[in-house]
Length: 491
Ligand SMILES: *Cc1c(COP(=O)(O)O)cnc(C)c1O
Image 1 (cartoon, helix red, strand yellow):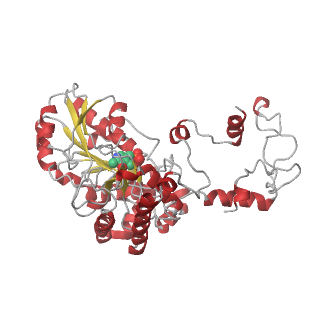
Image 2 (image 1 turned 135 degrees about the vertical axis):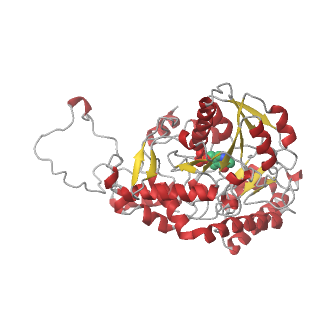
Image 3 (image 1 turned 45 degrees about the vertical axis):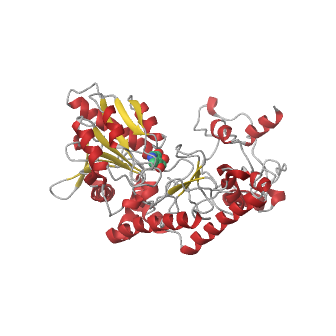
């Protein structure tokens, strides 16, 4: 990165009269103006005027400031940042898919409908569910949809007073948020010291106002919940349903199925478990699956296979309504389908086991230098509670920032909320042993630096273009344009 260039935004490089691009001829002749007068510009837009190399460097350097799975190791716990195979992109870019219009008649979009249907069947097999909808746009949107299915189920039985959703204290923040958006009340249940859910802690909370219990397995600590069948029995006896947050499905692929454990409704994050690219809030896809007997509540529209082998879009009036325009994030669905078909059943089974092996390898290699609050075998991810040696005052935030200097994306920090210094590491299955070893070496180096030069670690990062933004303000009031920045500097 050219630092003299970097400090200067393209607006500051602007020189009157320079030009770095030429626009194609629009073909519009004369003074024909297709827009009404009140929509036409009255002033020249304040765009930077630069030569072509400056323009190219601007975009090139911006792209290089963006960290992704293709730039380096990205052990962001809970997010499953696995490699995105490029063949998925090729499949999703096929013209037969990209040129289809959402309102095209069924007979003219059979290939797309078949792709949707095939992915639904594959997910039903993987999840042990009866039927899936691919319409929700993200995991959180899937949670909302799934909870709406659960409400529709209770309402169909005239059981309208069930408005409580029970979530463990280790739950991802989207669980209680989705319940609230669905108009339900959240009750938290405490985990055992090992992070798993205690059926005895749950029993007293179960009554005729409970709509559902939401769980993820393995839980957010990467620990496999062994008591699900017993929990499901207690929940079902109380008349409530079991919701599976499928964000952690990766290690279970082809090994265990939520439907067989006793879950009634689940979502899957295609952008996590099924390798489609994500970051910065999208693009996602959160298909929702239901067990037998709940299919009629899934949102409209649905894709059905007719007796003659053709496919149709249908709406049913038992459905909870619709949750998205047409069929959701179709390009993301195609990438996930390509991934599933490329790996096949045996490849998917291997993915989960390798992800688990990689996580345990890092955990065991680092547990002398980092505090491991829960011993034993984890699944695809695990959580350290900061450095083992707390005397230096170096925090999880400092370690995360120092990792940036070494060219890594930081792990997830301060989540789950069960520990003060959570550092949540998920390597995924797609990293080589050499990459894992390098990361382990770097984590050891940082632990040593924390002991020998704590102030340097506390001042990290030292090499990134932006050093320590205010995380909260960056999310709440982001400065996304040059004039935002100028306004800020002038204030
Ligand atoms: C990522 C995640 C979610 C939310 O999924 P999005 O696709 O980000 O909306 C829910 N639960 C867990 C455990 C997650 O890791």
